[in-house]
Length: 300
Image: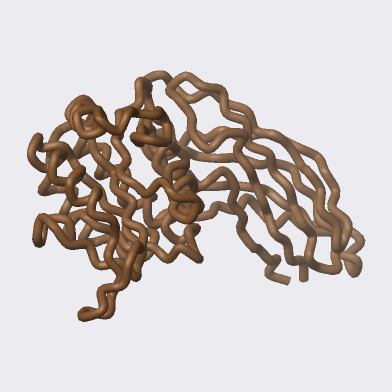
């Protein structure tokens, strides 16, 4: 019986309408029989209705316990398409039968549409990011900022992206928040509340979120799971998502279910729909990122 792992990787984490996409495919033969790859393909969600998909023929033999790059799939994203696009993977493998001394057609295989790629138009939305400046805060904050930027946001943090005179800091922050499309706050632990036994974050977070709330800017609070966020009672709690600083990959996957709705809120101010979507996000429903894999086996 043949067993394998099909792997693929995109050349970018985020695309724009009209961009050219390259996807590389590898097959790892984890079994003891010889495999042969003859076709790789990818179907974006808007192609399903017309039964279309991008495909690339190949002719690569994969020995037992070997890994081979089988092909590169290259296609252009239509200029009329944007957003978080689900896609399915299809591939065609053959297995050599020692008993029959012949190749057995394993048939085209389709994997369910549970991955996504990001096609985001420019210019990006402007996000004021409220976060700590010390190295300890930036260790986590910089990684989270990269995740936010991947969803089509240009980010700005006072004191990091631009040095501001202390006397002008308050005025500069307010102007930046008012001029931004939204606010993203990263709440890292700062001091332990001796009475409550939980961690609190810095007070500046309350001030900056208060300004954003006052000028009706969409807000998203990403908080360390050990932090309790006060201020704007009830509101920040509903808009917050907890993360584990030791497992930021989980946050990255959860953002796959959150950020599309947040972008919609920024674009249309439909706050109620975002709150509903945020409340429903538990485990990731889609798999994102530039790489993916599936495990398969023959029926013999």
